[in-house]
Length: 217
Image (tube, rainbow, N blue to C red; front, side, top):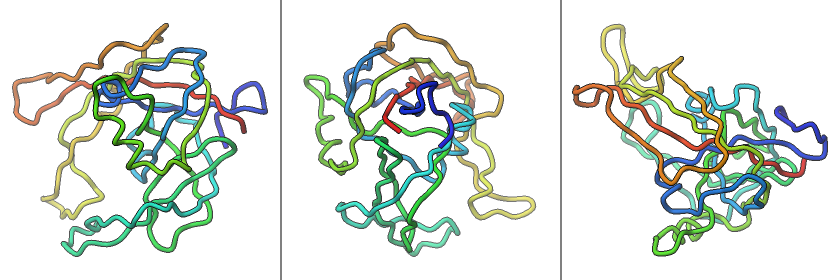
């Protein structure tokens, strides 16, 4: 595990909160104890590389009681393949992810975790998120820092998808070097996302809330 706090009995984990989750769940406050449902996926190290580059969590893995999921394989074929919802645990930190068969005994999670479920705001349908999340995978921790992370994205060639020397698939990806960070005393009421040009599917800038979550190691 990399990214521990000065107190060796605890560790700090970066958690990304997107605009939808900020609308659905009560915004965190510095010093507050929260109970959250967190997730990670194999694209997180690339997608959230700028969030906290040195962060790595070596987590023990167990399968979740949630049913199998089906997804299209990365080779571009149309034959769906099963993935097993699984739970990673590193000290008091837990998160869900989709594991390919055979389910590993441990994984190295990097990039950042993402908020899936929190304290629902009144009048939202966010309670369904806890229904979909494995209740045995929740994490309780203390919010130690809040930052606004602003990233530019554009349609760029995706090397993970089928491609040749002069053709390939493009997906929306974050533009390296476009990241901006702002320290926050409190969470914003909303997060912005806006187009940077008039070009359809062109570059856009999107804001995220980046939380330093402290848990027991």
